[in-house]
Amino acid sequence: MKLLYLCNNDGSDPRINKEIRTLSGVFEIDYVGMKSMDSTCFVRPYVANIFMISAGRRSIPGLVRYFFLVMRLLMMNRYQSIHVINEPLLILCYPLLFLSRANLVLDLFDSYFLRISRSGDRYLLLKRIVYGVADKLIVTDEQRRNLLPQFARKKAVVIQNYPPRFNEAIQKMKQEPVLTIMYYGWFGKHRGTDLIIKLLAASENVRVIMAGWPGDEESKALLSHPRIQYYGILEQGKAIRLAAERADYILCVYRPVNENNVYASPNKIFDAIQAGIPLIINREVNVAEWVFRNRLGYVLESYEPEDIGSVLKNLEIKKDDYQYSEKLKTAFIWEKVEEKLLNAHQNEDTFMY
Image (cartoon, rainbow, N blue to C red):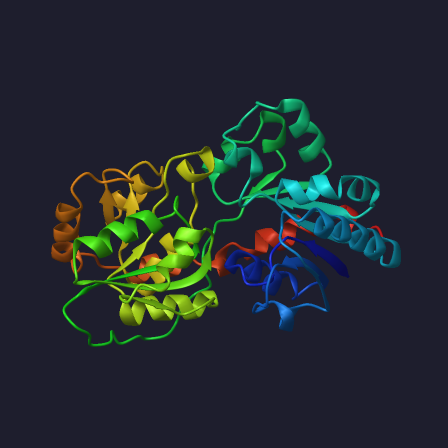
């Protein structure tokens, strides 16, 4: 069976990699992505074909080329299922997907409507057009399912943002008596860059490990700081290993500027469980209450703490107070939810051909 996977990522995103690996066990996958520079494509071993548009995700010429590439692929191949990441790509390819006979799965792990804080039944007509064409919608937790319009919830599947099981026994590296924070994934001024700058300025004893994608000029400039080590873009397992070996905390903060940040469903929470490393998270993020109840890390009272010195002191005092049981490590893993992804792509219509 053939599957068409549409995204604007270069094949390095952790969530996309998990999905591709799972789907490759059943489907022959054609992967269509975008890249704005040379990058590492981790999905390459798991797909039949990769089609990469060399352009930024907001490039109009690049998006036009993307549309015509998808049109050509749909004309040349008979796909049993199509997987689309987030609403903008579905809207871009809407006439093609509307006419396609394939099963269509829309994956909303970074929903456009949450980024503009228009959840529920707001923009309802547009949502009926966009979500109505999909056979299944994927969301990352029950909260996000409840933020969909009422009509769409019945076809939504919750597939949590868990990491693959991490089985390595890691010995923490001996290091100077400093506070080491790991800051990775997509990083920007609303995801922790400004907090890291304040922590570095407040104490010479703060060190930062970074890996991933700088999303703004402030984050790019941060990479050259003398107390920051940047490891480039890492696969999820390597990021977990690095955290386990080197870090005292994993940074997982979101400025509450939109619903997408307030209702964030970050893989870092579950990466931290696998690594056995506590989080730093801010209370404005809904999931912070769950983190606090389960003693998974330090909860900032605000994304912009008033007393950064007090925060640093607490982080140093509490860094060894957190423990992660084997029960937690086996409960929140990708292997326990990936079957739901396969089921979303294997409804009765998938086998009509």
